[in-house]
Length: 356
Image (cartoon, rainbow, N blue to C red; front, side, top):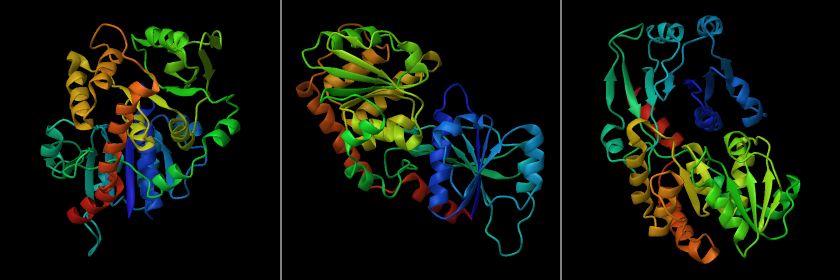
């Protein structure tokens, strides 16, 4: 099948991260994919090797007209997060399919949430009322954490690779000095509790090495002394997606942000703290609570999330290995539940087969 995925990068690279993982997953399953993205430059470091069955289109008006006119329309059109695909492509998409060909399918890939509305809205049709696609129907496809949703992105060999991962060898290849201290990944926006977290690590009896990811985490924690009491800090370059996964696998505690890294933290299986993307009117608070409920998060992990997301005041809870053990148990139990379900790519291809 031929898939066109449209992606607009808003203010971070999570949109591109999700869309590239989806494109790569469909291509690995044997399909041909065009990924239309308005800022393809970040794929230079996120996916430097590309994929032979994924064509990246620099989504500009001039290139959109030329690309849409070349070749046949796609079998499936995906607009990621309501980004409004190029009108030129939709004009091709509405043209009648050849006799005997499957019906074309238009999907709106929505944001990830554990809130109850996801199960109600997943798969529902939405008539297109205006523009070149007027008269067509597109469908809502919601990623999620239950059988009644679209599932999560997961490569078929992911857990086998996770089981064979060698932490010391990977750290050595990255040039990260490691002497057995606790490893913590910092991938965040600008959390109000960051200074308190650093102070906790600096004063702890257990040595900690903080691995700071490039971008906003580095801007939140600009380079300074690499040794601060019991805390050692390593600032990292931008990492390709597979190497970012390895980073999460290597760490004993992961601070992650957005949606793509939340899913990857679950697959990593280590305790994590999620900084959710802030929304107007604090709508993200309800979204975070729904996820913590689904995770069956212990009280201390729930409190840490509230503090990290600016939803509460007070001291951070303990972050030693004993205190984090219930958090790790909750994550691994959640991972086992999800591994028993089909992946997003599997459910997506099944859904398209039903609608076409």
